[in-house]
Image 1: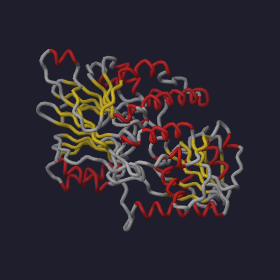
Image 2: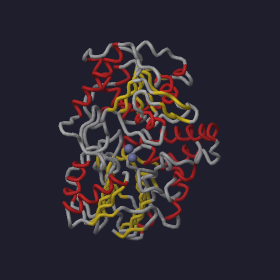
Image 3: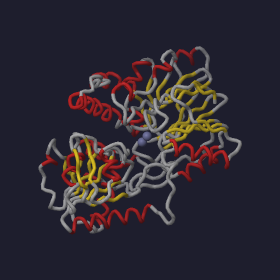
Image 4: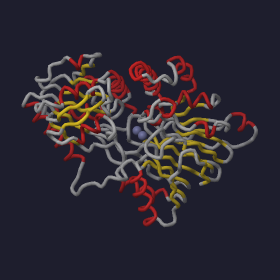
Length: 458
Ligand SMILES: [Zn+2]
Ligand SMILES: [Zn+2]
């Protein structure tokens, strides 16, 4: 089979894979690069533009996996779009939100190429989206080819336990199989249960490596980490400080809200409003509405009913009093400029009563990343508009990752038993760790770190 990594970056970027299996062509994911701007953020669709792509399969609705789907469909207008059932309920919201964000960036940052697609375009392509339950085998080849007597390869989504509607993708041809992990989590989170990748066997494996550079400290458990977060929240509220937890809108926000709801139910936290962003609220509602279809813990826990969720209006966070012990779970992981999280953090940084808790990945080159690194009392440049600040607030980090730990992924490689592994979705040190570990533990498996747009025969 022939595979092309369309991510323009070798690190975490715009996930997208071209696959030619037995004469049928599939795109897996159509992401957008979280750190690049304009057309540079797109996958290298140009490298495969002359191919006849029959279908596009989406692993989940994070921007780095789905954010350029309308652009991908411009290259391959005949392709139908397949995704896990629960992603089907999210995808249009995510894409419409992208249009809004890009329009804002055009106005505020002067990025002329934005938006890369329009609301109308999202509405026009929506009818070709199809949602499928996990563990159903689906034909995906173009109709005219199967009519001509060619047998269609199949595709099957496996629950990846990473965010609502996330999946690994199994593609089965007549002779060969390939499995793409997407983003995967092999441990239970507060809401979502772990991935169900049991029994997966494939000739070729495309694997994420997000946590390859991270060794789990001795004695670490998710439970002790959650206890520590819960105690830290209580301490800050006792002294009437406010807490900002920057998160991504889909997944992490709902996991944190579930933790807060459980804490309130156990009287570890007084009942009080939780301030969130608009997109976070939309996804929280979908988590609630689709609870019965989700492989999850606390199936009866409805976040919207259990919590007093208050959506911050534009500019509201700039004026609110912070001395009353408020909790903000705001949907802007990187604290980019012109967001509520950025402006709120700017007000909190110099105040020793306030606290900012990081619970996920933060890129070091973003305001959030610079803040996270700053020592107590250190003066640093937070952002161009925020300027120089001195950190006096409390900063803590909690490891509540939604990505598989590296040891679990390494075991997974052994269970799948592929002849070739393609490493992706991780920094250089993370990919290198996996390459050397796989080489020594499974010497029969060939390891490839595919370069952008380079065709690979696997
Ligand atoms: Zn993801
Ligand atoms: Zn991702």
